[in-house]
Amino acid sequence: MKKLLHEASLERPLLGDGAMGTQLMIAGLEQGNCGEVWNLSHPDRVLAIQRRYVEAGSECLLTNTFGGSRIMLNRHSAADQVVEINKAGVAIAREAFGNNHGYVIGDIGPFGGLLEPFGDFTEAQVRSAFEEQAAALVEGGADAIIVETQTSLEELLIGIQAAQAAGAKCIIGSMAYDVTLDGSTFRTMMGVEPERAAEFMEEQGAHIVALNCGTRMDMQRALTAIKRYRSATSLPVMVQPNAGQPKLVNMKVVYDETPEQMVRGLAPMLEAGANIVGACCGSTPDHIRAFRQVMNEFLEVRGVALERSPA
Ligand SMILES: [Zn+2]
Image (cartoon, rainbow, N blue to C red; front, side, top):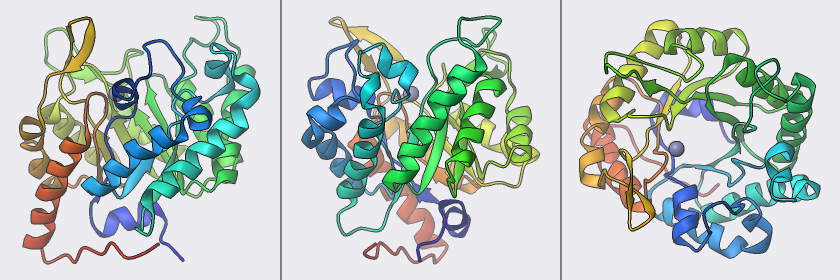
């Protein structure tokens, strides 16, 4: 039987994938349209993106289900397809691995609003939406669940508990940090510091502590975050920074870090003990290919054999 993701990640670092959203745009998805519906309407295009990540060396793929909760899909009148969209997301990622061994991580993004008393959503609504999505991802055969781009511990907890209720064997909590205006530190929009997030995730039974996306969270800041996580928990750490900052060029959002620029920050992260490394918004298969090369060199120097045996 395949090792659980968090166990495998402690034996040697694993390579994640790059962005999905920005790749869907390149494949023709229009801004504001629902990328998750493509799991049913254009599965070939989603598969092609994930295959490119596997070819580049990804060992973990996040399903194309970031906005796949009922609350998010309802904004695109697709709430009646929650189960199908999430199950198809798992199946497409699995297919992308072909004969390669790899981990399919079922992706649950934020529900896209605020909880009462700050917003209009009750905890019960969000809980039921996350439980439904997590159940579909686990039933579809996901190896792990990631509750990602989180800014509040309240919403994170609902996601972790939904994954637990669904019977997920590996649960990843992933926070999005913003660098403060003076540049001295970073915390989430809701004021959560990395040490607190790591302690909280461990207390609540998550298996991997992660960060993704965020504002001005470049490779250097992500390295600092790894160290701060490490100081607060012994759980494996996963990082997926953005490819630099978004810029508007010809009315299109582009990210300004090339694979060459981004990959410079990778070796220090591996040395600091990152267990799973991927990238978020704006990154491409070329970024992941560059990561693969540096990671292979890192493993080679340490005499770690790379096995990409059939699943
Ligand atoms: Zn992102």
